[in-house]
Image (cartoon, rainbow, N blue to C red; front, top):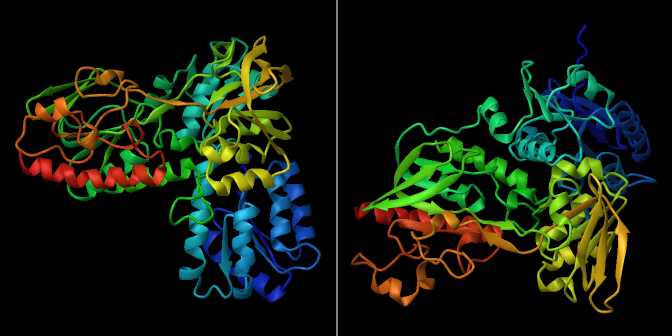
Amino acid sequence: MDIQTPSPVILVVDDDPEVLRAVTRDLRRRYAQAYRILRAESGEQALAALAELQERGDAVALLLSDQRMPQLNGVEFLSKAALLFPEAKRALLTAYADTDAAIKAINESRVHYYLTKPWDPPEEELYPVIDDLLDDWRGEYKPGYGGLKVVGDRWSSEAHELRDFLARNGAPYTFYDLDTSPEAHTLRGEAGGALPLVILPGGERLEGATVAALAAQLGLGRSASRPFYDLAIVGAGPAGLAAAVYGASEGLTTVLIEREAPGGQAGTSSRIENYLGFPAGLSGGDLARRGVAQAEKFGVELLTPVTVERLRVEGQYKYLQLAVGAEIGCHALILATGVSWQKLPATGADRFAGRGIYYGAARSEAVNCRGEEVYIVGAGNSAGQAAMYFSQYAARVVMLVRGAHLEAKMSQYLVEQLRRTPSIEVQLHAEVVACHGQEHLESVTVLDRTTGVSQERPTQFLFSFIGAAPQTEWLDGVVTKDPRGFVLAGDDLPEETRTAWPLARAPYPLETSVPGIFAVGDLRASSVKRVASAVGEGSVTVSFVHQHLASL
């Protein structure tokens, strides 16, 4: 007999019986087929229900709470509930007079949204907000939510690479650790077999699975449907996604090529809170998922995971040699490959990549951090966002910052959030100089740069956000770059390049040393390292693409 997994839960909390009945009725009308709609008359009752759901291993998608309740108000309840179900979306239901408290809750208590009473008609005032929150939850929540099965060692770098790939590409999966899960050995079978093992929903088994093999099985786009496009974009971070949306929406045949997963480096950010139009913030994964959906809506062809190995230019045409063996051509090319985190310059760090040391937020590891002490290395917004995210899981988060203060590289709102979070400790003038362990990371040596004293500290998780380098070696000999490998474009082009420019017109802003090839986002020299700036560059560049195409 098949045992079906219970539907995810939407929990509504309000001490007013009439309001509780009304909002429950409206939610059941819309969401009852996919979710269980539960209700509670107080924050205490709701916490007891959540504790029972947690004990049973049920999923909670959304918590919707009234603000004004006796004993435990809405913000207090949602803060406590976040400790039980950090993945659940949290929203306040408030009267108009309480909107100041709701905005403060968004800023200080990690509440995702607020709605005001009354919410009539629900089709306009309630459902669009709830739809958006549930879409975001489904996009983020993966383990235990159906899909394929991954069997392996939690400290295996190969298993981590698979899990990170699945999470960033929005593919549901459940991970079975050989050390802690008896079911892992059952799934693997008596014959054993190479790890990691992936079991697809249809029962097919991939032993010794790789990202490339898994991508092929999942049907991710890896082969171009045509040999030539109006516009090709390399890199599906915010800049590349924006360029794809604007290019395709304006009638250009557009292909978008990404070597890892949509979202780029921003896609690993746990929370972007200063992006216009999202007062509660959104994760990099949310932004990527929305961007991909929008691009595909306009007919963009997405190839991922596909690496571009070489670029050659023949007259007005550009040709991209792909690692999968194919070659595609285009009239105009936008380079948007962004940057990658630099390796941690500590003794022994290379041994533990993917086995305790991770570059970027690596949110697939969050559930493994429960009750642990986690180290974050870096002082920028990405490091701060990661610290806030992992503080929902870890017992303690330690940020190691080489400099004298956080304000030099981090937005002020994020600095204030870090200081308000008791489980986060910021250590200035500190750096990791050595990493230790057997099969995985077990401790790190931290140097106090002011005293010169080193101390070894136990930890199994370190997330590094230091430095950033462009991956532009494949462009050698084609476009002009600066000594660090960043692509020069527009006003940054050197005088000798402008003198040798082959066209009567001057280079467009964001155009490289080759007519019709543009550079946007973080790989461009002198770019502003912000998501909004990357989106702006990607969208604006399409207007220059049109002007270039019109001149051909």
